[in-house]
Each structure stands twice: as structure tokens, then as C-alpha cells.
Image 1 (spheres, helix red, strand yellow):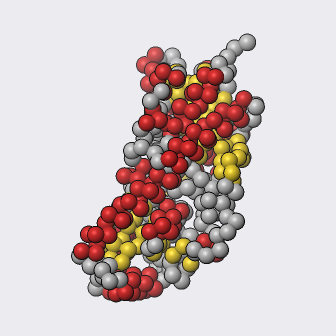
Image 2: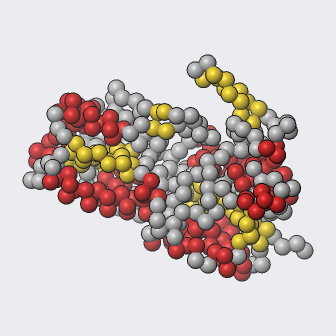
Image 3: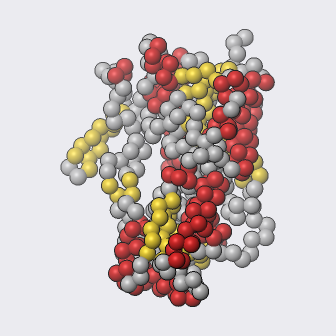
Length: 394
């Protein structure tokens, strides 16, 4: 009987803890005589792989063993590297697929028509040719949206959620979140000395395109104001709170943290550049926009800090190592049981296996009514008894 073979990949942005997932799967597989193939550069590894080209195979496929993964969990990033590739919406076909027929879709924006191709049939062919029985994709909303599609097409898939935004549905926690928040807290606390020395208002921008979890939890433990995508305050009210904070602070400064997707009444996040493979454009800094408004309305000086890519760099903290190891072993246990279409998760504070989220539902959001004080623009601190450790439910 042929040995079971498992493929594993990491898609989208890197976060601390990815290598811990990879190692946990490889070590668990070794105990069960299961082979593990690492697919490099996320979904690109299954769209651009040309099995007739040894160089392509060497670039995109790597056998994983205890020996070559022994130390990878000691560092951040992803041992398998990553990309933002969407096999269902390829703008340009890789050379070895040119001239082949794939379902195409046309979209017109600002008078310009563009065509994308769904190369899922090529992905399935590569999985079959590699003799991969199960695929374990690790990613956020975008990576997992294609994982759900692949499962619907008949591939056996067990997913693992990761994103600093912590906005994947069906789970209360995603790998990378704790480390990002810990780093954000450290950066803000360090900058209190500078903001206070100059008696200014500190404006911090943090990840959170569609949901405010990163800004919310950072504000929760640093006791500062936060603005999240789930609620649009009045600009005058926001500025008044910050000016009052500054006036009432013996050190004469105030702080606020904004999700990158935060808005206020009359303001819409500005985007620029070409959309990526999942339709997302880069966002202009909402912190700079608020800084300009504070100077214009209140005449106050500000200091703006961008808390973004530094939060995903370096080693994972204890929580991310713990969850990453557990999510990896849970996913492996699920495939040993013959399950598919599931995702490792935390639900009501407990580890569980749940369905891969339906992409049509979009990202998970903060429940403003129970978690966020819209008058004070702060987290709600009261009535936490009985809640899971992360204070929210999947």
C-alpha cells in the first residue's frame, strides 16, 4: 500500500508562528510514516509548477523531513515562502499554461477591461501528479477562500488560519495575532516618552483592513482610544476626546490607534495602485489623514507612527507558538481520520475543528454592541465573566 502524502503551503502575508505549524505537521507525520511535501510560494506553487521542468519542480516542491525542519520554529517568517496568488483569478498565465483553455472572466473598471483565468484544473492536475492525498493550506481570508473552493472541487483539504487581523470566521484566534499585539503594545509604550516630551497627540496606524481586532486589543491593554472599521465616529467628537485627553494628562499628551480601514463620518479610506490577486488595493494612511484633520480643526501638533510590517517580523511569542503547534497537530489528526473541508480553530476558548469559512460571508467583525463603547471610542471593559480568554466568540 502506498504511503500517504500530505502537501503544506503558506499563502498571503507572513506572520510569526508559521514555521511552528510546518514543523509540528512534519514531526507528527514522521510518527505515522506519512510523507510531507512543502509547496513553496503559496498557491503560486500549484499554478506555476511545471512538472516537466526539473528547475520548476526544484523551485516549487520540497520534501520536508525532521532533519530539514528541526530548527525552523526558532525564527519567524515562513520556511516555505509565500505569495498573493489566486488560482481562480489569474491575470497572466504562467508560460507552460499559455495556449491552454481555462474559464475566463472579464471585468471593466474606469473604461479598462481586464481578463482573469481560473486555472483550478491545473492546480488539481498538479496535486494528482504529485500524488498529494491531503493539502494543508495555512492562510488568512484570501488564502482560505481558495482552500474552500478547492475542497468544493473535490480535493481533500484541512486548513489552518493565520492573520494578524484575526478576522477569519469560525475561530476566535488566528496565528500571528498575539505576537503582533505584543509588538504594537511595546512600540506604543516606548513612544509615550517622545509624544509626551513634545506634548503632542500620537496617532498610530495598525493592520486591520476590514475588522478592528488589532486596534481594539492594542487599545484594550494600553488604555488609549481606538477607531475601528466597524464604527464611524464624528470627526469633531474624535478630536474633542483627544484634545481633552491631552489637557487632562499631567504630561500633556494623548494617544489613539487606528485600524488601516478605519473611517469617520465624511471620510472614506483612500486607495491606490493596482488591485492584487484578491482585488485589494493599497490603502493610504488614515493616520496621516487624521493628523491633518487634528492640525486643521484643533491646531494641535501630532506624531504619526505606522505599526505595520514590523509587527509580523521576527520570532513568535509563547501564545503563537502554542496555538501554531496545536493547530498543526489538530489538522494532521483530522486527515488521519479521513476528514476534509475543516479548519483548526478556537471556539469558546477551546480548540476545535470547524468548517472552512464560506468566502461569501467575508471577514469576521467586532461586535460593536457588546465590545466597543462608541461614545468613548474605547473597548468595553465591564461584564467579562464567562467569556473566552480573547473576550469574543467565533
